[in-house]
Length: 278
Length: 263
Ligand SMILES: Nc1ncnc2c1ncn2[C@@H]1O[C@H](COP(=O)(O)OP(=O)(O)O)[C@@H](O)[C@H]1O
Ligand SMILES: [Mg+2]
Image 1 (cartoon, helix red, strand yellow):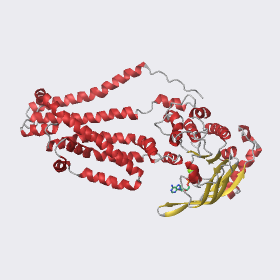
Image 2 (image 1 turned 30 degrees about the vertical axis):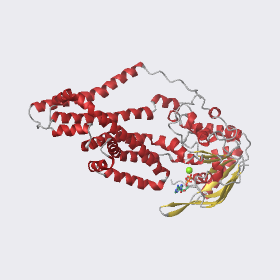
Image 3 (image 1 turned 45 degrees about the horizontal axis):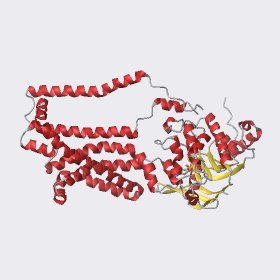
Image 4 (image 1 turned 180 degrees about the horizontal axis):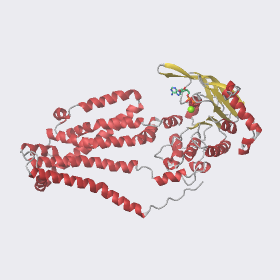
């Protein structure tokens, strides 16, 4: 048997190819966006769009005027969204662990998740604020609820995605519930968990936003309502664009974390090296 | 003494509300330190029997003992090693960490159990300690699986068609290694196979099973000397034993005259 044959060094052409691919991945979408924004601007100039839709240049102008305000209000939104996201993840992991460790509890836990998910947040928020006050905790709770259900489904599904033979192996080894959870269920669940995290991250941003609409003294939500009530159309659109950017970045950050944790598929060279031996 | 006795064991499964008998009143004895083979058509309950011994399933009737104690006690003492048909490795762990998994779960070696490094050498995987399962061929993955099954120095080793997915040449080589490892460790081994030659080559005793319901047809003692060598495959004694197993498997079908060709 060939002992750990050294991997051939990657050809220098590969890195050049990778740069070209990176340009393709970033450059092409950027170009498309640029063209669309240009079209939008032109159509607005020709007078085809209503007064409630500003030209991109007007939104840019609003950014120039109000970027200090924008960042002042963005901070609390990020804080509520991030806290809600982390809290929702922890709760989902805990409930998911209970659901798979005690099989009979699974339907109840999932049904509870559905009920919580179907509460209209816009109606719940004022009620919640009567109970816990209209400070940060209430906004975090709303962001948590907004993100919880997809996470719960992902965690339960992931925990159940354990190979049957490996599960039997853990039984033969007389593994404890905790060992089974940490050494088997959790690592098996990671790909599912990350899919759910990618869905939940933008949802927690939207949850924070909804809470801020109802009541807050700082936050993109309150900035948005303020702009709407003062008929500052470009500013209202600026906040919308800012929220979109936040939600997209949240998704992107989770995607990057996924790459780091779960990693890339095994490369062809490694697989070939394995097959060459008996 | 770690002999395994199966005493009038029956196993029923409920499928769609009906009760299906997978194993019907089987009694068997696997002497301590012996190598036994279970052979039979697909669905005759070979895997079920191994899973009963490993305490993954409980018998519907009858009793199983491992070294005089119930299987669940043997299991809790980490006396059972199991090798599945597919290697069933943890894909996120390296070769070394897969082999060390039972040590982590048991909280350390059992007695003077082998070190993972030693086992990696024993199964011929030196240099691949840090490889991930996806980087290994099927044969190499199965070696990892065997090393993992041996790391707690089990008193009994259960193998469910471990090389069924491998090509003939690799399988023969793996079988030779398995016999060498078995002789070094002195465990009581039960090998499930559907290859007649493999059963005879490996085992001291070949138990032939039939399906629907799963039952024992007969046991054939293999009196070939050990260590077994590939040259034995061509001896008349070996062929004679193969024929005996074949006769037990096919019964009257073997005696039937071939259909005359129509011209
Ligand atoms: N978990 C199970 N539930 C229901 N039926 C099963 C289960 N495991 C095995 N069986 C049935 O038991 C019989 C024997 O199966 P098995 O032991 O896998 O056979 P073999 O390994 O010899 O091919 C088959 O008819 C199979 O359908
Ligand atoms: Mg089987």
